[in-house]
Length: 405
Length: 65
Image 1 (tube, rainbow over the protein chains, first blue to last red):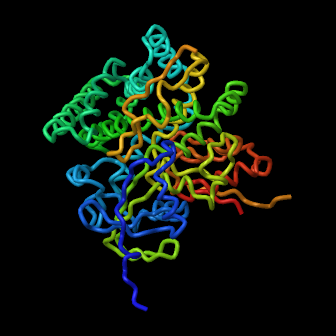
Image 2: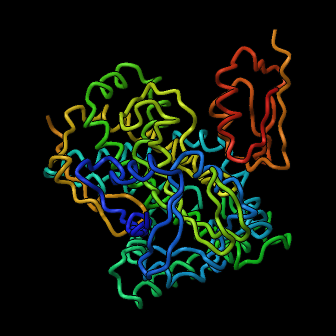
Image 3: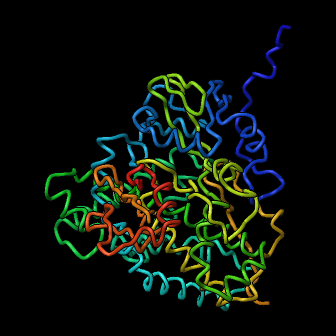
């Protein structure tokens, strides 16, 4: 019998959410049940692989020697026109060793779990201040603008050792930079303002070091000749980007998730020790970063599938986090889960450097929010929330809530 | 009862802190951010946590066998 070939025709990848807004696109599950990896059609007519199962996703991430992060690598997949335009950027997540190793090393000690945990009181102060300011606001309150966006923005200022008021500047630039509909000129302009900001910061800290991350980076790496001033500035820039939209959307969508599971929220409020597991489960369930990319540089077998050198792989983290081979009843939100660790922060040498910050900010912000406003409710039904469908980071641009019962 | 030896590879460790979070009675980070075993840690007493930490290490820098 002659195959018509229609079944083998690669389908396009769309990140648009389905009916169940808190779940990844439903076809991820269908694809994953068919094979751990699958060939798909990219926006530009090229093909690439998607890694769907937990095992395949971890295998690709772990083999950094064969699956490269540098976007200039042959076969590196792009997911949109805008994405392909920014191929040249040499930011930390897009570097391979040894360049990656030296940069990560330069700030590694800043992200030691205990060091970040020791900053909890400062984070609490930021959150309380924002919640105080919300008290008199007219309803519905936009929780993104009032809380989810400023918490990571202000905490980043605190880490870098710059005035908290600079958070507004960061937000403005990054908003322009990452809005796909922004004009190219505006994107370059925003990027340039940030680049200049961090270049100036490195110069200022070199002249007059203080007790902050920026100063320690400058004195430990730039003044010792390990990193150029340019590299240090780019590193500070990427630390800002890495923790900004991701943490903002995690705070917002965690709030939505918890309000959608009132029984588990009540359990958490009665037993605060459960928050630790809840944060872990929120990260798995929400998984704001859905897409990572790699380029294969040498024929490699992954989960029984041969990937050729020069082929691209799109790693679907949200799919791995809902893999029934690893997570019992994967689409159920369950704060008591004790499955293997999720891959929301990635896996391998590029696993999120700022993850202790994200966990700490979530575990500070969420309990304080629900404690302060026990009558908190969504201003619109979950189904009505408008998810951004044009970005690789899942999110909503606004989150209307009522704070008074 | 267990004769399993807990091993760490500091050259491979990327300082993600996963092990410290999952099994805080056994793992620590040194001042560089890399994995260190707590001197009085007892992996057998926290076996489930240690197994999770070993399985979850993003770079396979831990083993217990």
